[in-house]
Image (tube, rainbow, N blue to C red):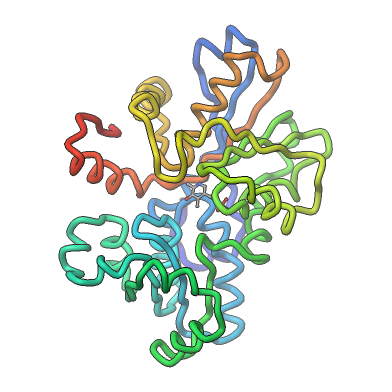
Length: 318
Ligand SMILES: *Cc1c(COP(=O)(O)O)cnc(C)c1O
């Protein structure tokens, strides 16, 4: 994919739909394709690029010099904002959950590849306590941040806002109208809202939440323009956000060895596990054509493996 700054941020980027070949698909007579949004950029991957695109244009229009955003220590959104923001000439500031990480920043960066990549792209961090982090949308909190960092363009945690949805409406293209089902991972619900808005009436959008919780429908209803064409499949969060089982890790490794397609353990691995499980259980009609959105997140594998290793787990994403 072209990294030329102008075309990267100003065109509608179209990614490839890759056909997935697995014996179970032939057996069940299902056609499965995956949209390789992960190939947009190694660090500004998938849906994070889509969500940032119009926010960065808006920050430019408002003549802001600094982007400020929020996230946890393994956030794909933090890295994406650092890299994309720097590419577009902004200073970037990340407000990171967990003040313990700020006690020895050199050590934190040595142990955390996500924050290291963001730092190497020029992002400045402020590490704050979990309690204080919860206050992050309060006006007083924002004022304190402005005193410290000057005027900035603020992007919410996870990157989801109206302009992010507009960017995610560019994921599906006219050629994708041939599919019966579109499958997407769900975190905050921003990405799937954009997909829902641009899906055709004959298509059904299935969301696979990577976390537990019944609040997601309402989040999606805030942004989605349609109410009938989508559904959340809640059986495949593997215990919650960032949680995993050995079976999930083995699945991700086996899927990669059989298809050459890498998946991340936080989002896309869980969704793909779910889709194939549903196919096995005949939950899609015979002859269905399914498109899975690979939302990216592969930068997180390195940090995830570091965590597995520190727990002395004899497991690794290959
Ligand atoms: C952030 C992220 C998501 C979640 O997207 P939402 O718009 O917050 O629902 C899904 N997949 C990957 C790889 C992500 O990094």
